[in-house]
Image (tube, rainbow, N blue to C red; front, side, top):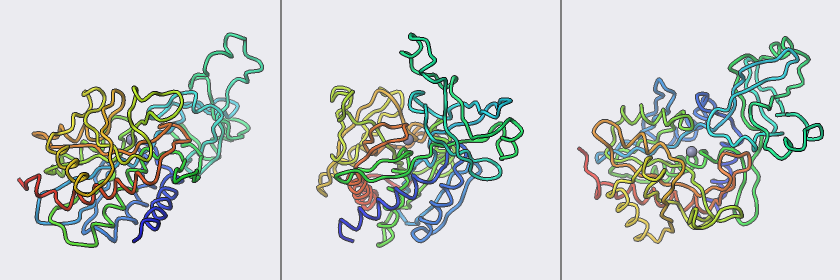
Length: 360
Ligand SMILES: [Zn+2]
């Protein structure tokens, strides 16, 4: 397919997967969508007890696991007050300020219920309070209920989960914005890679895995890496660029539109220090195929690769990410050209994986 066609397909998958909802521990809708997309391109597919989706395209050579987490950060109702307002906890790493006055969707037992996040109005705050950010604990969800009983009749209970209500929109120059690019970007890469690999025979056994509960402790990746025990693994995720106001190149050298990010180390080495053979494999593949990429060294967050590489006696593991602005907010921004380049890099890398890793 010509390049414009690929980008159109990537955009439409991003739209489908970010408009859908699936917070940590409640990834069912995303998994169902992913199953449908992967089905034509793989030989087998199964769900494990954690909820991970494990798809396999069979080969004779070494096995590679591609892991993309299906979950997004969200909210969970912890208390319904007498007047029908909902108190909640954050599931995953929220910066409290980004939640205030957002529209949310509650996934109640009778279906989706819209709501908004409210707080004390600034007009009635004391001067010193107005200068402080509002904390999550001082916010509540308003679904328009008359009282607790009314909220319960609408299908809300303790433990009902909610996600941000924000749809995908294209921006200028191939950039796009939505919630949950972390990590539906990785999911879309997974789909496009399997689609392109399906067009010819390859040596490797390729496991395409949609993992659960990454945002709350890299949990799904840990159990499915143990089950698969691949010869090499890559986590596909998003990472923080330093190319907009409020952050410097000294904080992050990464930029949108400069290609996928090959992680050398994240969380100052407490997360992943990429395996040297994985780095060699990815760098040589990119160089020989003229695929742009950026090297990333981070001090903050980490990915599924951290739990995968510590499985059993250790698994050579790396992370390939898409630079994404405003991660963990309702308005994340990425460049679709980076996704296209990332898909090319992974496809080319898998085609020659047997030259770098043995089936043992
Ligand atoms: Zn992520």
